Length: 94
Image (tube, rainbow, N blue to C red; front, side):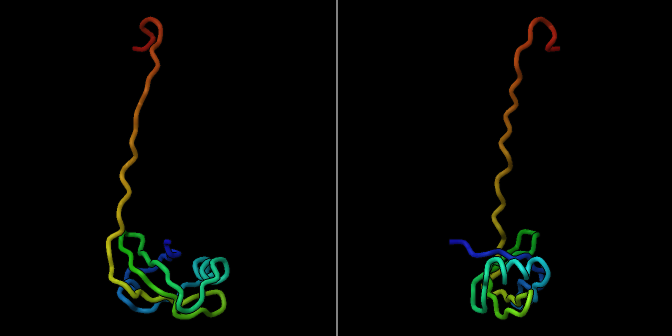
């Protein structure tokens, strides 16, 4: 089972606590109902991620901390594109 993901600045992936507020904090605390001690996956949006945990929940926000090693996120393969073209009568295809 995968854990909820949270976007954090790159410095937060080093183990320093980071406060999530606004939409991200609201989503973790009120929509997902995470509490202190719950596991989360932290990522920086540039391909680096780490395991983490919620260490405190206050109001509309949560404080998270990276608990696992930093790792590169796997990149999804590029799209597979096939182009098909219908044959037209005469030389209209040109």
